[in-house]
Length: 277
Image 1 (cartoon, rainbow, N blue to C red):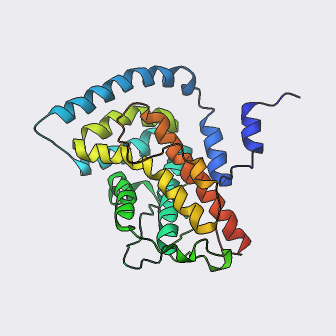
Image 2 (cartoon, one colour):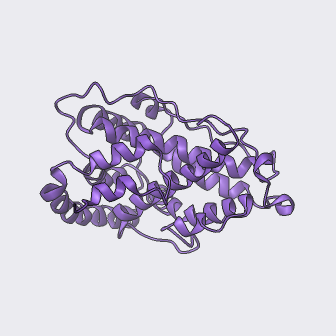
Image 3 (spheres, rainbow, N blue to C red):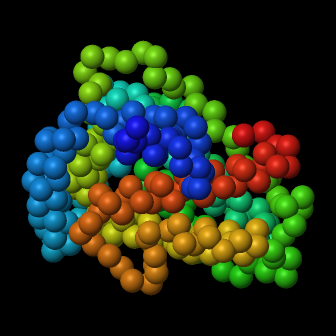
């Protein structure tokens, strides 16, 4: 019997993914909006994003409204984005915080603050914002200037998980509003220009270039655990090269999957050690 692409995704265990994340992502992929609406939106909204991006860079007056931006995001998620996609968004904050904290905990630098961004529900994003999330990456890379590599690779039973937090959300998919019809990718397309508009040009440039540090984080984790594949998973690479909004949607997705796949690999190690996930 021929297999569908979704069948193959469900059976692929080479790149580990949390079962809940895989289930919700494959369900999200079946949204009929993706067939016609999403490709059309990508064309139109990529044009509006580039126009907004260049106008913001050229403008001598820089404006921002972080609070209003977060309110818009939360309202949009609550009323229009499918619950499965919302779970994936909330999970991402936890998973990336765990990756950064894993590096910090095993770097031998006690003065580096852990990343404490763990939203349990949509309204938590009013405080633990997307801007804070991006800054978590940038501040970690800034402060982690000279990690202690003398112990790397660290034996599995000596790895530090001090600031690792198993993902625990207070948001479920069982109470769906009839207006919640947007899948993850369509929602991102609809909001990417708004995100650019309500940040200053330097803030937005920092946000979209924070993805490039996936490569650096992957290399650090490889060194810590004595592996050679985490950096290979990273699509966004070489952070010394600044990028603009071209190809943003794909880079955004690949950042999310780098985080989830790497998080899944480390969860496997935790299972081997008898730790809770």
